[in-house]
Length: 135
Image (spheres, one colour):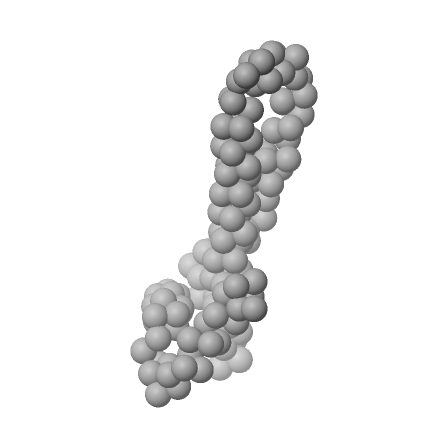
């Protein structure tokens, strides 16, 4: 069931379908552009960028903290919420739940996507700095 496999497997399947066209793949072009850009920067500036990306990667953890704190806010206002959401014949609770679950899903998706991009950039910069140090 490929539906539940991650992006890494999807990229593998895409590349495997057309091995002759791997260098022109959209998945690799983007990474190559990022790598080429970082190659054009001198090592001192690249280290500063690296430090900033480490900060960004670690700072992106605020989204899950924010998302996990929302239920406590709802707990504080639970009496008011119950009156409005669960009033007799009211369908507001359904709208509320759909928006809430959608917001959580979007926030977590954004969080892990940001974290993945930061990790990719950090790895590229580390490889470049290591190559320069070895040469």
